[in-house]
Amino acid sequence: MSERVLNFSSGPSMLPEPVLERAGAEITSLGGLGAGVMEISHRSRQFAAVLEKAERGIRELMRLPDDLRVLFLSGGATLQFTMVPMNLLSADSSADYLVTGAWGKKAVEEARPFGRINVVFDSSASGFRSVPQQDEVALTSGAAYVHYTSNETIDGVEFPYDLDAHGVPVVCDASSNILSKPIDITKYDLIYAGAQKNIGPSGVTVVIIREGLFARIPRGLPSLMDYRTFADSGSMPNTPNTWGVYMIGLVCDWLKEQGGVEAMAERNREKATLIYDTLDSSDGFYSGHAERVSRSLMNVTFRLQDETLEEKFCSEAESAGMIGLRGHRTVGGVRASIYNAMPLAGVERLVGFMKDFASRNG
Image (cartoon, rainbow, N blue to C red; front, side, top):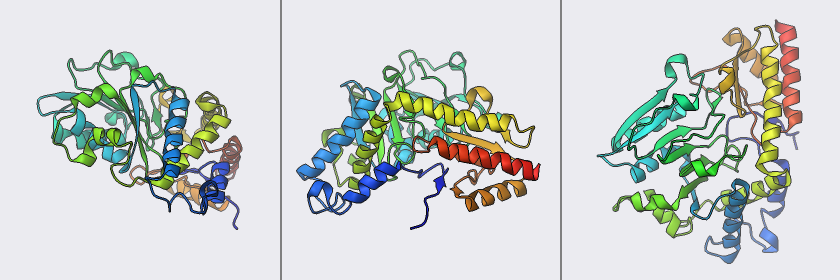
């Protein structure tokens, strides 16, 4: 078997090795059952325990109160760009959106058919390098909700605070920084996240929704586009991604063993600081994309002096066992995604490579 590489991809990201080892040991026999989780009925008591474990893990790590429901859907965060307004917006109402990157912009486009969309912050003119300060956000009176993306993977900007909407329901796309740090859950009414960054494998989307929102959902929606359908059926109106849900439970166990989200926050800040310090001390050989106060702890984006040098950097990194460092195809550059499962030693190895590459090519 080939030696495992360090995966700096924005997603699907690397998973904790103890999780992969446990999953590998049980892939053909879940708990001694003689069949794997992908083979058993989703209506069986064995899978009921798997589903309950995954939900319990998320609840404990995020300290969710009872009035927040945890749902497991498919379709990725991208489907939530449509489901959120379909469930919470009407033709005679409006919603506020903050646009700090490509995914926030996409969310606006998908929401427009369902009602009036007010873009109350947009950093596109400056190249998506920043997020607003809390006092910069002026919300619309009577808005149905306010939507924001807490961490933008493509541009590498992250909100360093939980948005306080002063009574307006807050909807957050937390796909790329969920479970990476503690949050004030009282500030949120709906959080959604694709699993493939910090929660588990691709193919599962976690939706955390306050029960009070169910009364606002209009009747007559397609059943699989209605949050109530998933709440009423225990996330199983159809066959769910059984393997993905199983993996979420294992990742939650691993996170608890690491000390929970509080410990992960400290580790993630240490990892990000190592890379940003390397960028800032490179005498311009590397240049970070995001403004310092808006820098992401999950996705470090930067440029070299030209595209030829960037390609050389990424190619040599791959040869050295570090993959996934090319920036998003729409913006180019270099991006190091350092989610929970990326060990400190992996970041130290990247930083060592960055310094050596600069010394050889500067």
